[in-house]
Image (cartoon, rainbow, N blue to C red):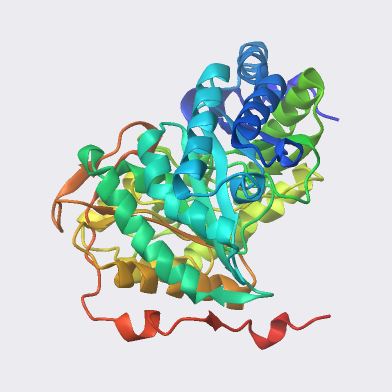
Length: 454
């Protein structure tokens, strides 16, 4: 169904408009690595990941060369480590030692990141899950390529507020552990509501227990392609605008489908999903915020921003699902601050605040992403921000997330440089009023009434 002519049609998009396949992510189940002996677990994890993924990077480069399609990242996601290590880990340091193994094998096979240092605690925490969560600061300070994600809520179970409170403290602690590098550890840590099992994007990727033993997921990108297409219909009505986004998303997703199929066949691993998210980078011309401006806003954050983002997100999905039978992950438009130069410009111009970003997350495909805040922000305040975002996901039956970075030693008006795809960000101001009593109540926020569909 997909042929080289379709790829040739996208040459200009690749050369001039920053079209790329953002990631090939191999998902690997580690359930058969479980053992009560910690050293055996470590060996099992290393051996399985190495044997499954040893040709991943080489295959990705071969596909890049053959088809002329840039594949920016090659990544691995694994079964949540809280499950894999539960029988063997007796302390948080035991869990952190598994993170080091993940880091070692990721470096050995050459991938950019490995995700799955994770726990799913939307309704409650087992002792092992609590140990893993408490090990995150140590784990992320001792590793370079490990990413961590924790699912704290869902539409079916409600929000685990005990875990929300704990994660506010863990994010602060992670910032302290990595303060010598501008609290970079927090850029590899995300909390979710309704986390998908098949997300290829970091830091949230993990290999869900509903998945096969090994799969290939692909994440496409292309904000620059959409912006360029919209430049050609500037001033036209919404019908033409929507049709243009859909057609462009279709072409972008076809490229991802091709890469996914090729990688699947060459690695002899089943194809999972294509995530058709518009994922920006710090590069000029690769910005979701610039798309919003092309739709008609002076800056992202201006009145009309939420409506424009809702339109964009919906049309991207409509175009993408026509191009692939297996669309999954997050799929839509990402709005990270540090990774999107247009978002950075909007913050610096005073057009974009955390509160407006929160409103935008009601209609985007993720949540509050890569936001730098003052290092002296209280843990309870971070927990309050997390609770607000998870509530949006829970009530609206969608995935929402928070990746927030309290940069130790820096305050509003200063800038933090993360480098690479993580970019740079202005420190954003946070509401100073207390939510301590709310966060300290403990327990769970119940699931909404519309979750009861049994």
